Image (tube, rainbow, N blue to C red; front, side, top):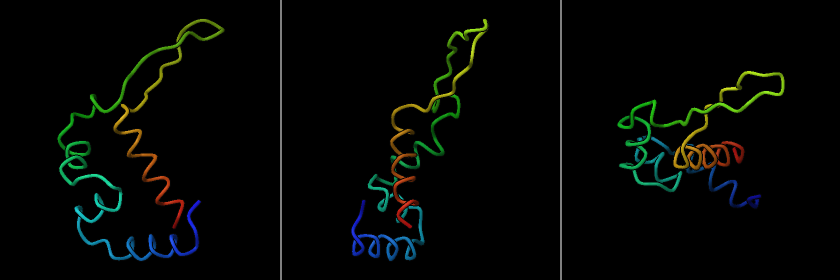
Length: 83
């Protein structure tokens, strides 16, 4: 958990965001990587789809993000929770 000073710094940086490059920097990734994940990668390649057997028969279909998307989601969650 961030200290009070760290939280204030993150809030200051968040309030100063004005470009997509600023967002990428705050998330700790390059703008090129963020752009690739969000806009260039085909949506069906961002997630894995698979079924797991249900106790009652049939399958439960799971949609799970690939590792890079999952990491980005975790970083965003951590950032937004700090605010």
